[in-house]
Image (cartoon, rainbow, N blue to C red; front, side, top):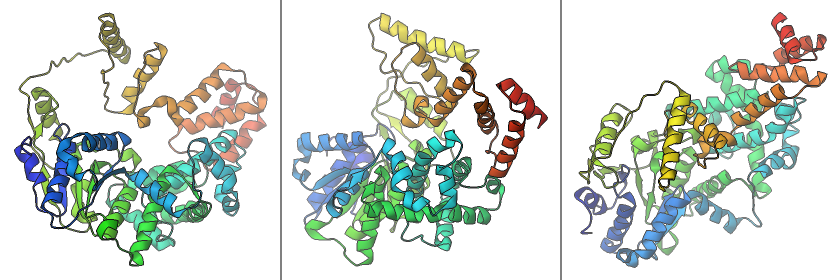
Length: 504
């Protein structure tokens, strides 16, 4: 361990127990996790097994490659298992389920529309959404509802342990305390958009909304979740959900693991990015194996709240995991120039929802920083494009150009602009406008504008635009009233339909 700095060595040689490792970017976290395993294995009086959990295949591959190719870790290669949570859970499905079927993409639409038909036929709100007379809703509701089923799993709802209203409401309230109330509200708005939930209820009291969601959607969710498992049909989120259910069942029946069958230590990488389902599965694995837990990550890099993650778990692990955690912080950035590290530290300190930490740069060199003000978005787009073109003309690959914005609305124009200029680019999945529902709606608007409409289509087009122009979609009664009013005027163009709308 001679190559480790003081802060790295302190973590790697810490006494066995539950540990929170705060590891800012570029501080050598991957190396430290493996050296920590090595230290525990060499100082233990009994045989030791480790499970390192990652959340991406890239992180899994990085750890596995280092473990396999670095001779410093040759003595622990056979006792350290590196897995993504999904692959760990999928193995559980294959071990205990005969002929499992994993569904993705368009298969999700088919599963809701056809496979789950025996379930939704008995739930009026869901049946009306899937059989809607509105073609736009009818085409999108099956996939949207499947996504909602997965989202409720992601948020930690459990069809076995939250099977009645009181348990459902208690978990909802717990999520709000964890800072995830907005995620439930987002799902409520989606359900209202497809008329599963009355949009008027979104403004009502929490208890009234909870009861409405339970009756309109969650009772269906309970049945649909159980039905798909019985049908041996699993989504990617089910890979974790099924594994969690199985671990909890084993724990409740007293089937704990030890010796060669179990893990002694569990490491969780990028812990700031876990969601309630991830947390539940990790807790269950640790409890069944009676293992210590090391959580590693950086609260300053908590960027995945859009998928149900919350920094609350890494900020207050003692509140959500069983035992006291000792905290260690890696203090040297080996990746970035000194001024980048210093500026980032000055900026991030204004965030009061974090653990204060001091990070020093290993390098004394400074990066060149240029601040350029532009008058408008078009000028900014042209400026960045010119930089890329200049790099190409000089024979320099622009593949390492990164564009970072404060929010999505700042990033989307670059995607559209680059696409129009045939400039190859990639964007994070949650930022990729061309894969989003927003882009689908934009295409529909362009189609409405560009193509002549049949008389019968005009009213539906106006209703569609109304839904885009207001915060909450019209409820069923108001929609039917407006639709009847517009059809009475039999508009044959958008202009005449809008004139009728003005009169209404």
